[in-house]
Every structure is written in structure tokens, then in C-alpha cells.
Length: 115
Length: 114
Image 1 (cartoon, each protein chain N blue to C red):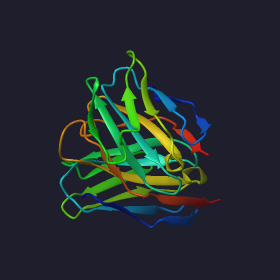
Image 2: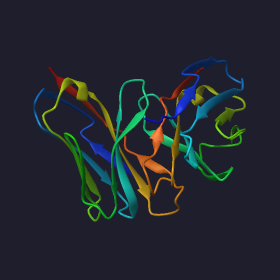
Image 3: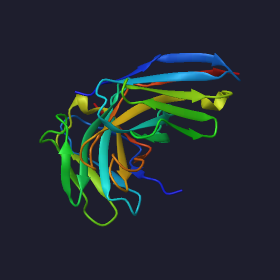
Image 4: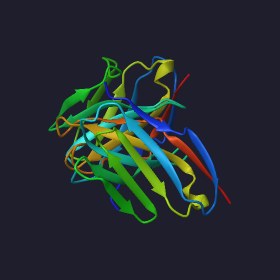
């Protein structure tokens, strides 16, 4: 079964450093998302991406965050200057027709620890 | 603002029992509702997707129902097994654009006792 893959599975970084989390969505999907889950809390929406641009972003997704689809397969989340409160599991997701259509498929997550 | 609540937060039941997990949402203008499973430290696996026009969906031992007008959904697990132990998340999609976000509840941690 096709799956969303994410790298790295776990990254430890110092506060203030830049981090790039990588994702390979399912190949025929057109809608891409990043969500995050702080330990013990709800899964929260960060950003959705369609047709090579951000279609919606949450309040969490401030100027420190950016997303990019540099080629036909990868979808990245960059955090420019990490803060302690950015420590979380970051999930990439993709969907064929958007969240109001078919199922959204999530990756296994990238656990980011900021020290 | 849409809020999704799941009750109970945690549940332990003996193996073999049937059980029900509950989900409620404050804004009934949803497009669909999904139930996910999350194993500790792992990603989210979609179990069932119910469109707003549907009342239930079934997959194996799982049955999810949706009462959109009252803002409720249930996930019924029949003949529970230790392998069902996980956190179960409910999430709703708003009735808006096709590329809209989904909003999650905090989940129910389920532990099936062998």
C-alpha cells in the first residue's frame, strides 16, 4: 500500500538552529499538509499546500516556518530558528482530493527535540 | 470555532469485550469525520471515513456512526483484542474548501487486557 514517508524520524537540535523536515507524499496526491503534536496534546494543523502554494495556515505557522515542494516528490517543512516550544512530533500528510474528499494519509512523523 | 471532544480519555477493558468510543464536535457543519489509530510514538492510521451524508461505516470489527445534527460520532469495536490497544483519534473536516484542514480530538487511550 502506498505510504507517506518522512525523514528524519528523530532530530535533536539546539535552540536557534534551522531544521528541515522532509516528506515524500503519496505519488498521485495533490494536497499536502503538515501537522504537529506536542507531547500529550492534540494533533494541530500547521499548513496545507496545493498547486505549489500555501492554501491555508494556522496561527502557529508564523514567519519562522516555511514549506516547499522543491521537486516533484518531496515536500519540506523548514523552521528557521528553532525554539524550545517547537519540540514536537511533526506529521506530514497527503490527500488525493483534499480533506473534504478522500482519506488523508499520514506519515510516521518526525520527532523534533529542541535543547 | 470547531472543538472536538473525546470521551473517555482512557479506557481499559478485558479482551473479548465490545466497546464504544465517543466523539463530539461543536459545529455540525462538517464535511466528513475520520477515526484514526495512533500507536505510541507512531504516526496516524486512518481507520474509517464517514462523509456527512452517511450515517455509518464499517471495516471488519470496527463500526463508526455519525449523527451530524447532534454533533456526535461513535466508534464501536467488537470482540476487542490486545492488538487493539492504541490511542483512537476522531477528526472532522469543515464544510469549506476542498483543501481544508481537519481538526482533531485529544483521543481515547485504549488498553485491552489479555
